[in-house]
Length: 144
Image: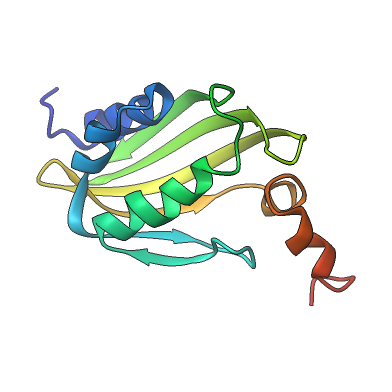
């Protein structure tokens, strides 16, 4: 497989996140990429552009974990054409003293060796409780 093969691009990206390789993370995205994180969390929206994705979205997520505690493990990938589904686990100690342990799934679209879009799914209830506990407490019962 070439380095522009969609599956290779996504695996390289996930491994760069695991290893903390900021240059590879940055270079993995097209300049006009999008990342959709659904839900009602402070980070839930469509992030637009490589700089916003890397600096604001991914960068802000790094501030909620105790440095040196993040563990990322790629569970597997499924690829069809330019789309790759990747499943990974994320574990870390949070700055709030809790233990984050989530299984995530991303649907990546890759063109010309760059990630152009991602839709990520995770247990947002766990994300709210462990990473944004003040936000979770403000939500009304029943999630409305």
